[in-house]
Length: 382
Ligand SMILES: Cc1cc2nc3c(=O)[nH]c(=O)nc-3n(C[C@H](O)[C@H](O)[C@H](O)COP(=O)(O)O)c2cc1C
Picture (cartoon, protein in one colour):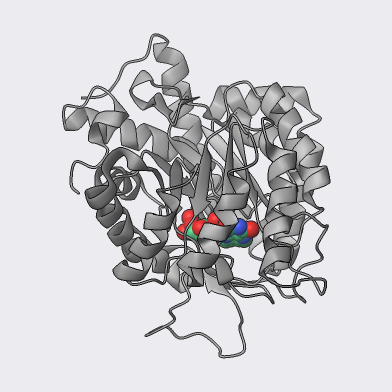
């Protein structure tokens, strides 16, 4: 059954323009304006494009008219936050908070800005990215380059206040530079950003799983270190819910040890999960450093989501991430236990109209299965 919105013509135009954008991105924009540059250059150009176009209100209005699709079946409340739809941009593409105006106008339910760190951070030596189109994946080795949370968080607050429909979350991480010290230094680094974020965004995500830093990942390698970190973060008063960005490459017992710690702290949600480190069976040059996004993340992330939902039920809200390109894949994340769904690779490989494709397709799948509301499908297969 197809949902017939109050404005039939608007809906018909929206569907036609989404199809047109899909065609245009695949056959014109991607080959001639994106994939003809190195991924590092294409990423910088995309950020510049967002910075320029956000100052052209008629263009933003046109994006909204042509692409935004709203449907009551997709509206949801998770961790006390209202979302127009469950889809968000995952942390990492918009580290310095330059994209919210465009994302709001094309109809994202939320965006996670960052990861941002207490000190400005230049990141790892370039290249930061390698494309792997045969795997619908990107190799990422940015190392948390960003302007620092003193700059990024006020920007996120401003974007959140001005957004028409979109929630803005901020991801905080530990600074990746040569001043990195011991565990206590790392904890204080997170605390500085958390103090800056308190009350200024819809949600805050604590990234404990960046695979590309010189300090490694001490807070997901030892439950004791994780407990110490969250004992300090708990002392910071903050009204918004906190999510933790989990690592992908953990066995279930290792994953569970971390969750048992988090369950004792001021943590409401889990973002599952970060980049894939396992390259088994993939034909990737050895000197390419980094973690893999996209399809290589899909199955492992679903497995963790199902297991967490089964064992922890309502204790944590889950934001499912990894390899979501189609409405069916988003639906599987939801049926496995995700209340929210985030992505990056689909935006890079399919284009900005993919948000509309995902929303429309998910709404149809939900209706076909007799659901009246997206929240009813959460965890149904777990
Ligand atoms: C370009 C890029 C940069 C990323 N940077 C971050 C980051 O700063 N913090 C973070 O938590 N995850 C980061 N990630 C991981 C994504 O948030 C996400 O977990 C991963 O890409 C899987 O989602 P996808 O398959 O939809 O791309 C990055 C991913 C990409 C592609």
